[in-house]
Length: 263
Image 1 (cartoon, one colour):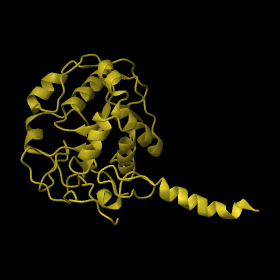
Image 2 (cartoon, rainbow, N blue to C red):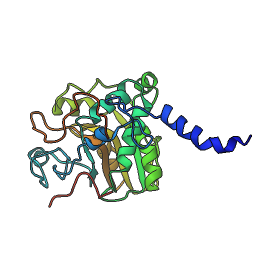
Image 3 (cartoon, rainbow, N blue to C red):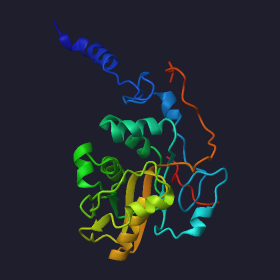
Image 4 (tube, rainbow, N blue to C red):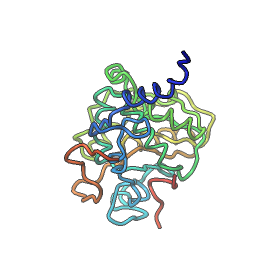
């Protein structure tokens, strides 16, 4: 008996039985990914924001009040999403629950977000302190940087910057305390030959970490430093318009833009 004629049916059954579930709502995933169509459509683009720090705003501006009061060391930035549902759910799984699958979903979303406003020669993920790297098992910024670098054809290096000071968690800190918390926390281990680099982190909150790293690289002699992050947190009290989380799992699927080019 020729078993080859049954292979298409077997492959279809395997895809059905092993199809990934959405990490956010547990509905069927879409296109072989652990994110359903409804949750994917809920990803909020950061198209209306400050052109210097990417904070989401009701109306896009070249500089927000905070940026007019402090110098931003980076040349350009690319932050395609707003840190709200469902990115916050996926980020919590990725960063605090050891889910590399969630990291792949976030990386796929970034790959589909278009092109950065300018193309650097090198991507540098923000490093973790060795103690946090040991406890987490991976650097979430590096896990996002690798597929992005492959997609854009840009090399990624994780040996240029190091985190030399173990800092307190930034989650509950205000902007001023965050800046103090990361001061002196990083060091340049090796100078790359590239003259235009992009610093990459998963989430940008006040810009303190990215700003500290950017300033360090500039002082070390790199002429141009851009900053990239997957998502930007809104300012406290800032109302956001956009899709709300589904109450039950669905059954069917001027100033520079902070989210980059169109896909």
